[in-house]
Length: 198
Image (cartoon, rainbow, N blue to C red; front, side, top):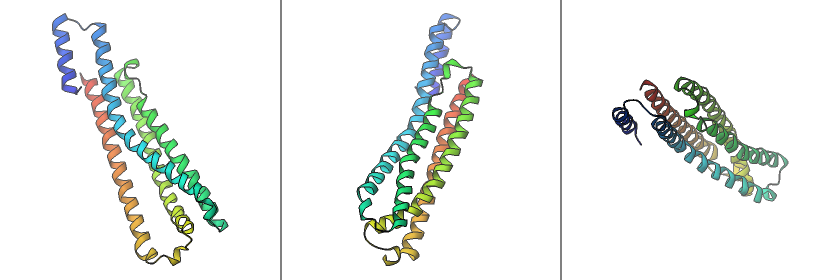
């Protein structure tokens, strides 16, 4: 239910009974909570897809670990597997912290303050995830080459084309993701603020 529909329903209930009843207040709180969660769930969809990709990549590395011959590449593979397993957990837990705000149990001012604190924590963890993701990309490229039985220097155009393109793609994708998440979080905060103004 959109904000305008919620306002109209609230106005109709106020006009029909003279004063808002406890039932209508609970109904409005529930509609607000559902609208809030649906906005946060959009971020969750991307996070869950990213988690699946990370876990599949970790499974691929584990399945091909025996093909990695040098000790340094095995260490890199171990670090990559650890990052692939930990990054989704950190990301989803921080998202759950933002998602699990109970709007109806607090005043709207407390809810907005709580949301602001959780939003900042989520944004910081997302920036940390981007940094660790960049480290993961730097580590995993030589590991994938090692699984294929090649040294990076044997891959044609690696340093002149493949590596710079991989960095450019990663940075563009990470920037787009962070901007999208920030936009969704700002829309959610604006929704909460507009309800407080009513």
